[in-house]
Image (cartoon, rainbow, N blue to C red; front, side, top):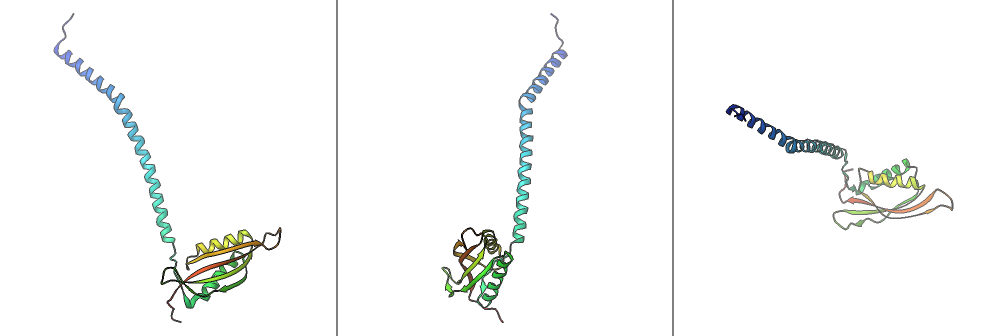
Length: 174
């Protein structure tokens, strides 16, 4: 056997160490780097979705219209607006009767019940009730309703409902 020179021994040792280092890199670190890259891409996707959701929420806040209480001396205008909304949905108002103004469960609000009788199709009624919900000006809730076909086999229905219009005690200067 031939004696290896010290330089050759060091070279072989360094080569073996480099080979082991590469082996460890490919066995351990390379898969971890792949997982890290994958996690980074997932994070980027989540961050992008989060930013889009934030932008959507911000735009909704800008579009939101502040609902407010109806001032008592503007109740007739609010009722006119309500009927205008219903007519745009092709709802036929048979009658609208304001009730006695009542104290609400939580003062300083008061409630004016409106007893309404309308004729419409189911779709027109849904459109009208949806318009009430989307109305940006006034606070209005449905207290109760009852519907029945006008005549058997007809698409038209007669609906009686009571709406609560929330009013304040303040009066605008006239």
